[in-house]
Length: 432
Image (cartoon, rainbow, N blue to C red; front, side):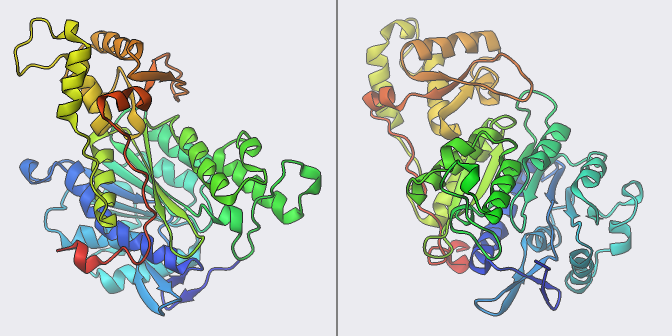
């Protein structure tokens, strides 16, 4: 389907979802930058970058309300030019479509006239503007981006239909050179329910794994899903006649597992733009505190209670059950076993951990000691060992919290997110 424009704004078919997504990113980009730049205590001195891999035009036309709003790339530029502390922030906008790129440059000249477009789309070596415009496909863009000193970087994939896993791999392989290295985060926009309900000329996935009864359009959708997951392993668990909500949940669960190859933590944030429609913004990160802060950020938007388990009560029960590891400690001291468990409960998305978690180093800077503590927690039933199919093929034990045992300490898992809908989101109320 050819792209359409209203003025310079790209016209999007999923208009309600697009507006909801852009409203959230308008708030999330400054939130993320405020953390990764070091914040006011570090004078925002750490190099950071927002990389939009599907930048479009910077503006979007919302058909339902006949309005033009800033797209995600527009909000990235707003952050750069409306905040005096963003001197170390780089904005990289990648758009392969020639028409979109043409309109993007027009939007930039109109809205942010202090951007030198010719410099921004010229050689990266002579570009001192910290704005980079790349009119090229992903392969070439990744090669160019790899030569830019990005610092802590947030990559946003915002496709018109779906992201191919090969694109995720290219970014991750270029940036994450060692075991779950921090400094790179991805946000991926997923049109989740479209896979099961269809949209425009995109057919829903078939409800059978029998290829002989697929229509030609269903086969195209299956092949698109193969590219999305990076393999055919998903087919057996998704191509069935189970209720749509079960298939939808399994779809995201499987995608989460795929992303865990490169990222220790994967946080899907659900959207409900219209009845029966579910989309997700999926955050992938190796930074414990950042993911927890993002969960709290989303919880605040939803006006849901923050996850606050009764840690003090849980510790009293933990101490009663394990007096041996408290020998020699005074009244205020806590054993390392408890510190590791508490951090996993309160800071680690999905309750996932291993001996290389950066926040564990603050408890004990010897990974071997951390390994022994994790073994002890597994032995006592607080952790379950899970498969660790990491990109570096390292034989490091990986664990997930065992909520059945933690329930005995009075600890329950965080509640599932209620999908965010237009009725939840009022920018004026949130900004107060």
